[in-house]
Image (cartoon, rainbow, N blue to C red):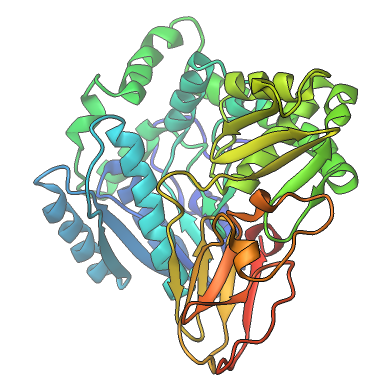
Length: 436
């Protein structure tokens, strides 16, 4: 149910308290603040709330400078000055490296999350606050609708979701952007406007431009966001069914791959079968999102058909960073390494590293030295003197997380390895799902 009234009055303290009350279960949270109106108001509302709550969590504020606009550095510095006045810690994170020629907003969004979540891991923050509003929810719903999304896509953004081991919390998701601006003006708070928010080259801006026309037909942001909530309820009910199927019918190996009977997909209602495969692909591939519905439908139809086998093109598909492979009566899903491989992560003694969005590796403080997490690689089992468990092909483990010290494999989830000479301390590698 909506928390904030749908009017043009400033948000009251009791409304802010209701919006941020769920944060009391965290010890340390991070706020993503760009300096724009939505995130600036989230920062000030959070500050007002935390001063009235004795058990409010500690907080750190992140601003990401993507290096795409000359003004960005000054805007980040401005957020830092505001945080200093409020007594909040602030850190500017910079996106380094090459930029793609197309899809720059999507790439920037991915880089923004990666930078903030990595810094959260170093500081021990548990939740990231995002300033998405009801208007953002409506725009996301329209965008998903235009892309042909199903029930889950049309559920749009959740108030709380999980990504790479941290909670993404959207406290303002049921508050209109107009009401946030009224609150800012009433308090005399300055904010900046990103010119890209008016650039119709970007799909989201085009969706935003449709809202006034749709509102004339009673399809305003409130109605669209309400429909997204209805879809979210339906998705949650379906997921309960999928959870049971996953527990009873899917075999998962601790190193990542999973296996299920192809006939299972024909026995299940189509929506449940598609959601089952979507979640398995997302979790196995370490992605933040499930695959596009059209591609998923095609892959599931091919792999579950009676004619699918290794001798035909229908016997193997790649989708969202995964290989989906039909072997006899079974379908295997495992991580695809790709031509560029999977990026390695170094972990120092006493720290926890997140690798490929799928595994957390924790090193004891008394460890002999830092370790590197990287994909085991093709032929990795053979080189390590290991054999795959019965029913699993060797290549299903090429994307497994091998924890190495001085070139030797120390740990590989689900496998017993011989001790490495000179190593001391403990290392624990476990799927993210096991600690979420």
